Structures are given as structure tokens and as C-alpha cells.
Length: 429
Image (cartoon, rainbow, N blue to C red; front, side, top):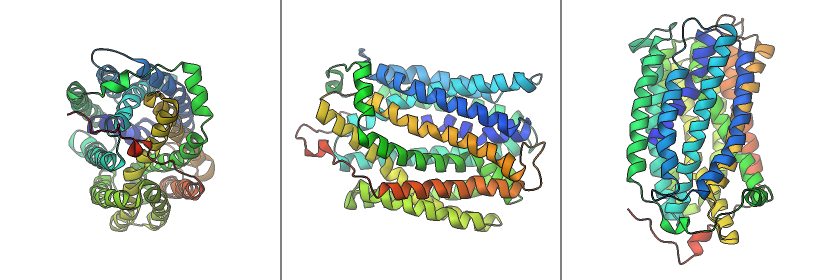
């Protein structure tokens, strides 16, 4: 989780600042590319998941895909933040779209396989909750590195507030680090051999089973609300600091760093709540608290009040990290119990469709900043740039999280079927 999170977090957290605010790409053009990115991402996810489920090699089902995806993602990220000086206009858009989509495909390849290992290797929910808390803790550590440190590294250590050199150097460092971590861990993992012995489900039959499962749609939509809300925060926080708080981008280090580190503590508390009250209760409560957390962030007017408000968001965010993947894993368990086939990769890839809707929502939200507030790019920010990014980082996410919280109250979450099965055993180590 540490290795997979570093590159994709830098990509999501710095693309708007890099291409729109520094290179001057029109925010509407950027939004169109991100919508296309999300559509392609949603289409290739099920295919990659299906291929993963059907893979049978001496090295396992998931590991070969991780070994291929890691270097591709690293190279794509470095190219994304290494734009030739001669490029502008259409050439800049083509470069951006090409490497953004390459990174998307590599990220989908990695996460369809990595995500499938959680329910496969950790069948019992208590055991799974501990494993999930650990991996989410490493994700938060990756956020400290690639989200909180990035504004400082790119604008103060390797570059300046108004140059792009720092992004190139930082991308190279992150790419090498992430690739090394993913390869090292993938080479050391031992997959459950029983999963490879299951029958291979045909593609169309698997698609029909997923699309006809009402829990897939219900839980997927709520997950999309949560992921889209946090996606907006992730992509807009640096410009929120610059325009809404009136501070240098490097100050995002303090806001993001404090909130992420505090979320580690919140995650530990939420993991206990999961063990005592169960994943569904935790999931619903965390969604409601996440929505409420955006209210004080909207009214923050300086770094201190933004940090305090960010801690409120961190409470709900920690709860979602502790519970959301466990809810999705229950759907996978139910499918395995009912149909007798291990197709976690395909199912998770299908759920990834909802996560990828965050890209569409981000693109629409960005385009709205121009029409509603007059912000089009760093070259043409308009007179209401502060209000624009306050809406993008606070109001839009609050509405999405509130929608998800409301919908979650009407959803029946399936029981953990593997908790009831005598065949559920601990993974090999």
C-alpha cells in the first residue's frame, strides 16, 4: 500500500497545480481530459480484473501483474511531470492525456491485483480489520511523503513557487522509491493456492453476475460518494492554500502533514470500533462525520484554523479508511459463497468503476469553477479564485459525503460469509 500510494497520490495531488496553474492549461480543457481519463479507466478496470482472476502461473495469479505494473507506473509518472519546454497548446494537451492515461492503466493493473489479496489472504473479519488498518496506516505514511512533503520539495527544495523543475526531480525520487517497494513486496508474497484451484468464470457470465447484484450498485454508489469527496480534497488542497488562505503552496505541508498524522491516530481508534461494533456501523458513522467535517474547513481563514478544521475531516476520513474496504470485501465474500468462484479481481475492478467516477466529478467540478467563479487557469484566475477553491475543496465534498451518508442508512450490508465458514484459516507467511 505504501508503494502503490506514493505515485498515484502525487499525480492526483499535483496535476492541477502543475498543468493548470503553472503551465497555463485552460481548466475546461483539463476537465475534458480528466473525464476521458475516467471513462477509459472505468472500461479497462473490469478487463484487467478478469484477466487477473483467470491468470494461472507458477508465480501466482496476482504477483506477475504487480511486477509489470510497478515500473510502468513509475515511468509514466516521471514523464507526466517532465514536459518538454517546446510543448504548448495542443501538444501539451496530447502529452498530458497520453501519460495520464498510461498512469491510469498501470494503477488499475496494480490495484485490481493488490486489492484482491485482502479478502483472499485474510478471511476472518477481525483478522481482516487488523490487516486493513495496517495497510491503511502505510497509505497514510505514503500520503505524508507524497502529499504533505510534495509542496515543500517542489517549491522550496528542488524548485520555486513558479517553476516546474522541482516536480520533475520529485517525480523521479518517488517513482524509484515506489517501484522498489512494490517489487520487493510482490516478490515476497505467498498467495493462497486454493484460490487458483477454483474454476475460471467466463467473462460475460461474470459481468452479468456483477451487474445483477444489487449490493454492487448500492455499496458502489456510496463508495463513489466518499472517494469523489476525498478526491476533490486531494486534487485541490494546494490551490486552496494558495488562493483561499492566501499562503504559499509550500504551507500545504503543514496542513496536510498534521491532518494525515492525526488520521493515523484516528485510524487506530476506528479499528477498535470495527472490532467491537462491526464494519457496517463504523462505515455509516464515519460517512456522517466526514460530511460534517467539511463545515469548519469552509470557514477556515488562516493556517491554524484550517489545520483545526482539517482534523475534523480527518476523523471521518480515518473511519472510512478503517471500514470501506471491509464493506466491499463482504460483497466479494458473498459472491464466492453463492457462486463458488474466486473472482475478487473482477469484482474489485468493477467497484473501481465507481472510484473512477471521481475523475468525472473532478472534471465537472473544475469546469464549474470557470463558469461560476471565473477561475480558468493560473494565467487567468479571475477575481474570485479564493471562493472557487473553497467551494471545490469544501462545499462539493461536503455535498457528496452527505449524499453517501444518507444512502448508507438504507443499505443492508451482507454478513461476512467466511467468518461462518470452518474452512477460513490464517494466510501463510
